[in-house]
Length: 105
Length: 395
View 1 (cartoon, helix red, strand yellow):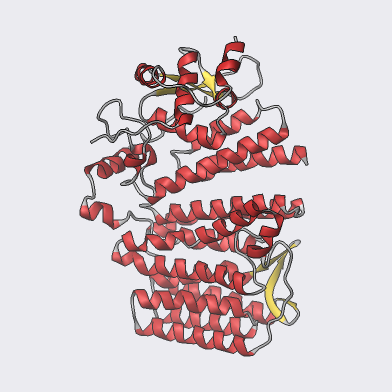
View 2 (tube, rainbow over the protein chains, first blue to last red):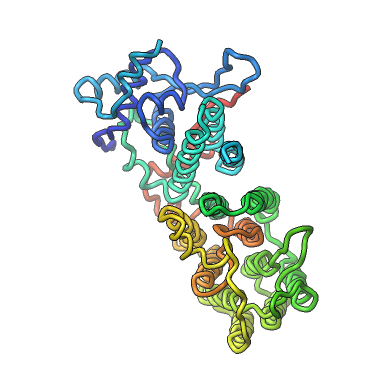
């Protein structure tokens, strides 16, 4: 039996940021900056999302040569449905991410 | 400081990517790669510290139980799947792994304290090097630990001779001969070999091993080392209580006699900064530093707590391990004795990881025995196929 709980404000902020990115891949530090979630909270959330099938994760070669690959993330279709269901009805409490997201390309 | 801080952050995450459970390693690598993208050194250090905290928390969460993990998940499951909750499941089914995690966590917390307290960078490097060496030996010993060590009694006797030789020919400070010089470092032999001896003896408490334990007790009495004599007595008593036996009673009796002797002999070594008394002095640096030291030290006995959930055959070794390291921490709290793993000193780090490698490697009995939930069984199956936290590796 699945036990449903209200999502934390950090989980909501992360889902909202990932939803806004849509098919674009995001990186860990970028997500931490956008959502103002600390890395110690962000990665456990990412790990859970990935393990539960809401998040895709893959290693990507950076455009600039000579740099190591980075781990990138985006929502799966199930993740997008979850994010839409959760974020449409609820205000996103984590400050800052929306404004900065709007400023990014 | 700034360059050093960034390098240290990177090294810690790189070490974590090798030391943490296989399921978490890709994530540790992912975190490490992000460091290159962070401009400020301070921000990079904070990011790395958060990542280490997350990794440690996840590893311990995995270790402490597959049963609780599903209920703690903050996200609904998209579909019925055994994969859903495997993320936070087990590892605690493997006390050896838990010992490695607790040891690495304690060292990491100790490094944070040492850096905050302004300890010489050499101290941090020594502890980190001891962790890497200890983890490597943990891996190497793991293969041997899986099987029965037929010559464990002889090994105990051999290690006891090292303690006796140290007592007679070791480096003496203020009348206490406890150390040997290895290059520029002074190694406290008892902190390395005693926990290993105890684990070997727990596996096979035969006559030769008992003689070895008695010789170790004798060596500690003449070194003299009140703390380690008491610690040996605590470990052997835990072993005796877990599974009584005549030989174990003799070994415990010898260790208690040795401890009694050390109580009658002067033991007045002064406290060494960043080594002794840090369970108290760390709070003078910062409350968080104090908390890190206390938490790291307390975590050392954690593998012993899994005894309640383990197969009966595994309990004596686990209880002896927990009793031994708890006693080391208590000794550090009571007198001028090294605070293990969180303070400066590689001997305890090596001793902890080596003894942890000799813990029972098998799964905890409880989950399999009472079938606590179908989910937990499914989780274990998922883990065995390596599906948990699966992330493609970089090319």
